[in-house]
Length: 184
Image 1 (cartoon, rainbow, N blue to C red):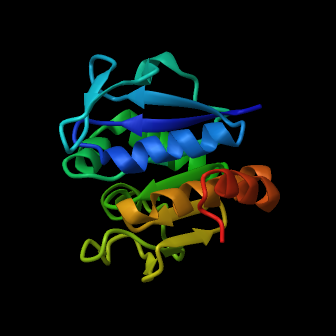
Image 2: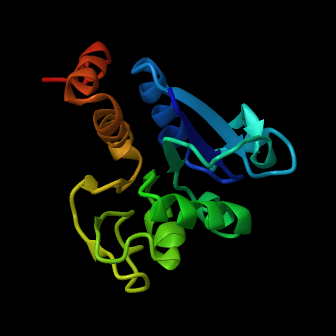
Image 3: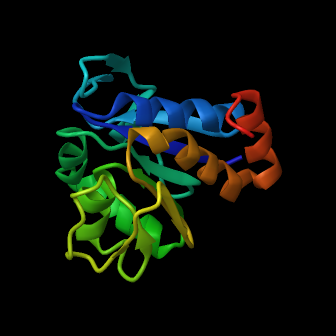
């Protein structure tokens, strides 16, 4: 099974990052959290410290399944400022690799890189930008090809379940949702 990576920068939105990790792991996916800081400890936007599984330089991303970007401010701008991560996101997109971004990250990280050009996408309301050519929508989650975007903290579970559905199928996604009492 391929590895998925959730990138953490100081100021990340805790519920978005940790919900993705939790839901994807419940589905049986191999998920590694990655600090872009000098050390493994990363502090979320609401002061919650998290110990990441690894540092950015510890991993080989060439065969990654998902590259996932939680939002948060200044988390998303900190991700956008990490040149190696941005280069990796562009290369992953060019390979057709799966990319997930939620809240501020679609607008602040992916749009400037051109990853959303011509794609349906969502982000935190009011952060939409004409840069990058995204077709901004108003749903909580948008799936366009190999890119999944979410609009904010309330969309964290549906966003993560959409990623699970693309990787593991709708049945697994529904099973995880049911186990979390998220299904109707």
